[in-house]
Length: 507
Image 1 (tube, rainbow, N blue to C red):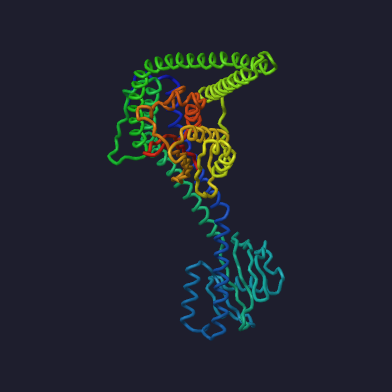
Image 2 (tube, rainbow, N blue to C red):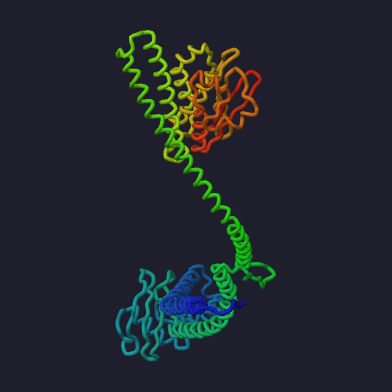
């Protein structure tokens, strides 16, 4: 598959992929064949000698057993013994104590008898024709050795000894055949290895081209995708799809998805820029508003508190008037101070300047501690707080901010309580969270106000809010806190009251 001109780097990569694949295969094949030849050369002769040692030893033991059980002189045993000699290429002789030949499978039995007696008496009577004895194993019954027959320049593996019946036995096997077999085996393996490398080279050239072609095709497609050209597509050439074909299909799907996504992103880019500009404008207006409100309120608060202190020091002669004005000034100053603090808190929450400190704590204990600390306010409103005896419930949240949410809900309930003057706090365990709700008896919130109560400075009943000093910011703070912790919150109307709630994660 062609996609126009390709740069030199791509061609180098393609050549390297095939070449590396071929070289790796050939090196592995040649290495394995060389390893087998080396192992064969190093150990095959030893294996053959070990096997032949077991053969001559078995023949020796067989003669010993046959002489003991009386089957030694039978014709059947002669046939069996000759079969063993023919099968394994061994020669044997059996002599009695008077050096009389009992059995022999050698064409030169007299010569073997001389060698046997030479081994028995320990004299080198055969030194001119035998040399280089190497003992492999020696026991009280037999000796296994390798010696060289100088007459024929041949090495023999021999076992000789006296069996239980008193006969003298010698069994030997020529090692020349073993070495020839090892040589033939090595030559054969080398020849087969060379043929295998030649045939394997041809096969791997074909297979590497077949395997790498679709990979290189996918590389070209990805190069086109990198340049945001999504027209190139992979076409499977196999009826039964393999992993490369599945990868090609996935790349095709990725190409289509990327093309669609980029189109959508380009379409949304203009709208996003407009939204960002609009958001920046709104944020700037909000910052200016909160900054101006905070700044403007701090000065009159200081003035009001200063004049109040001056009045108390005797600026006016009428004590009742001084006390009245002082009380009003202090009250207004306190309300304005509270408003400033709430606005500053809200400003930090909305613009991310306040860090959320997530920790694990017992929400039940937090609620009980707050309710206990608010008993004075509860008594002033003549309210009754109801809460079931819940056990410890551990949640993950910012404990300080959670308590602030609870404080806003609880103070809001006290300020709007009515009817039976009951505040009920409930904890409801859900799947992976707990829902905390604060209910107060009284008038429900008007339906047209439900969606606006979380807005800053929104007041359902302005006259009543002014009477208890409300600022219309408390529920906005609740909204900002809960959204900073990514948790749900809300409100529900009942016939006899209102319930505010919020959720916290338990794990």
